[in-house]
Length: 192
Image 1 (spheres, one colour):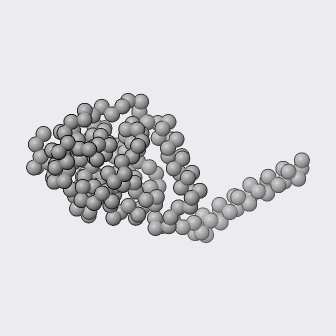
Image 2 (spheres, rainbow, N blue to C red):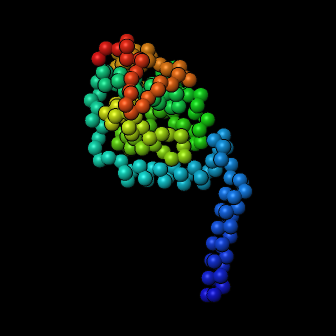
Image 3 (cartoon, helix red, strand yellow):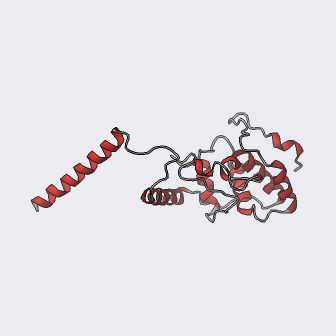
């Protein structure tokens, strides 16, 4: 029994020394252009899925699926999300592989996650991925409309599809958004 306890102690000590050495001597590749290992990706994805599932709101998406609501969602999406997640101009963003893990291309491959799960991720972000918390920058109503747009982006009513194409942002154009100043240049040509 004593040898078992000593073995466990030495194993834990070895692990602690390994973690210390990796963190102290810069042995862990931190660049976003270093792909995560399969184990790291599996553990992080599982942890995110379980945490968001546990904390997502119980409510369903309150957005009425109308051309006007989907157009508003498209406008918010193009203004906040398209640069990283792909948009009307390029369904696959050039930024996709510049993050680690790669950024999901939401209008190229529509997520099957429930709306309330996507809402939680949008509102709170995902640590160490580059996905920011949008809480306090855009309203909950706007987040729900963005999610409704994403989920219906492959089957938009003609007027919403035309408005989305008109709103297409050019990669590199980023509007200034602050909680106290929330304006959109793209709204000038839209009717609601």
